[in-house]
Image 1 (cartoon, rainbow, N blue to C red):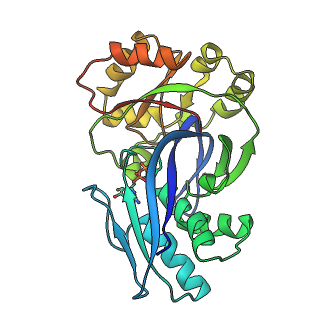
Image 2 (cartoon, rainbow, N blue to C red):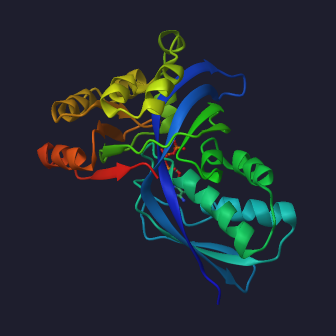
Length: 285
Ligand code: ATP
């Protein structure tokens, strides 16, 4: 039986501006995505009964039709009128509901994988359109790039040809934080004057972590901190450990510290309190 094994990477938001609330209820965003080497493993193989099934041992990941990977397969099946069945095994390494877009990445990986497994010959444009129908962050992962600017809901992607490789210490507190609650706390009067994406880009191109660090910014930070004021202490601890800059990813709660090098990331990891269970060294993919 033919099996396809794929890696499904996470993302960080190096800069995130919330520009406006739209009439459809979503927010107009501008962000810089970075693809990182923290990856789930996805295995796809056919099943004879025509159904789509998810196998995943992570307690927070839905196994039924709500799983974004299953949604991606069902979208292709329904839209293209396909009879094939599919097993999707997900080995979760990316913390769930953590601002790292693990579910969105899984959906994109299934779209890309099924294009090969089912020999669909979909163009990149068609894959992007399917991705956009599945969720705001899915489209970025259709592109094989390390960095991109995302606009609209995050689905309008402009790849950035930047060779910079960054190292980070990624901390994901074990708390539940819903994206909708964070956006619900947002005060747009305070955030809509930000242009942190355009401020960051020239520094990112120059590849100097100590210059990039102070330009990392997330317009959702005031909303995240209003829900969890204690995260300010976590950020300070990471700064005190020697980070070039510290920033939340997406709607949190993941926080990343920018390091000067892999070795520097290791030194910061050693200095950080053992209370933070999910601490990982990650780099640009
Ligand atoms: P978002 O900001 O879109 O909520 P996130 O990056 O913070 O995304 P994800 O790991 O993508 O977080 O999980 C968001 C939600 O999606 C979780 O509540 C989870 O139950 C659900 N989900 C559905 N499918 C998946 C999947 N394949 N992997 C992880 N979570 C999934």
